[in-house]
Image (cartoon, rainbow, N blue to C red):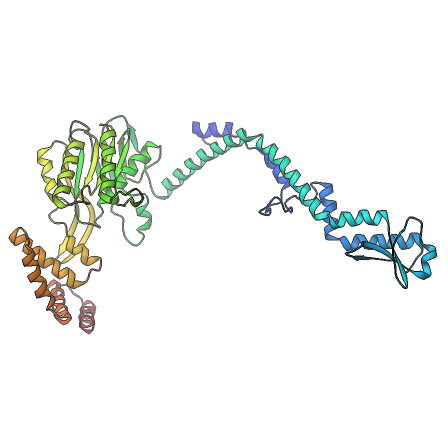
Length: 477
């Protein structure tokens, strides 16, 4: 019933393989055993020889009883019975008082004090059938399995073609389901150079942020005035998420998917490059920085003006000045005439923000954050302009770094701001002073910081009680 040409094509061309299905369904049980060499996977009623052997295996004693009953009727020997031992196998036992009634077809096998034991051709045939039933059954089932395997194998091309069509259908279904479920929109895809995304979201991250609101962000890039978005801001603020969601939206649009955004116009890209994450390749002896530079080299050699590139923290694996120099050179080269590709460049080197005034097409962006005293709140919103602080110490505190370490870092930072650098002597002196501080002193300083940040005009009674409880717990520890 779908009007789509693609759906109609799949419907008309899809081979449902009913003959192969019927072949397999008629023969195999629903849950066959793991090994085809042990039998037990052919359905009852499929093959009469298999049914016969299974009957013998499941009712071997019944077969012996039937033979015993038949022999009694034919010979008239009421005391006749059939027994078994490992030496002779199955045998017919007749007491000596009835020996005169034993027929000629009986073959004497053993004489005892009060009876004689015989065998017959029929009994030996039945013995061979009963004792060898399991092996015969397994071999017969395997032969039938090989036959059906060859028949299915001969239809390989048909099966592969149907599997390919079902795979296509599965992709369309999955993309359609996620688009409806998560409010995706149909992007406008053209041959232009503009990437314009309104309220874009990360398709994966937004699914894991159930206890808070995922903040959507806009993206605008072209190959003239907005070639590179130079993104600064603190760690944990969302720079990497923002860049990756932009790359994913571009990718999803170009494979024909709806995208997680309010609207999206995507100018087709020929290649999508990413330099994100940090991992050592210890097996080949490559450090984090070496691996990073290898990937950057590949990007710079293969990217074109139609490409889309995201760089995340280039140059962080080496010294500050080397890293900053390399990061600047890469940014200049990517945004310059050699490549001129649409790109995003996240960095902690605030010195690079001057590139906006020096190179056409580089635009500064930052992740908004709100600071109250020593507390920081990430707003997750991308805004134009450079950041005013990296908030590294605040992030360390958020991550649970001990207060003593955080306070020491603030002291070192204050010296760096005042003197432009920190000498080893100055650091050592400060460390010595800090080392003399007791845990009680640290608690006093922390309590003082908390009281300074407290807004007594807006605090409620219950908040005040909780605040006092926190201070008490601070000193009790």
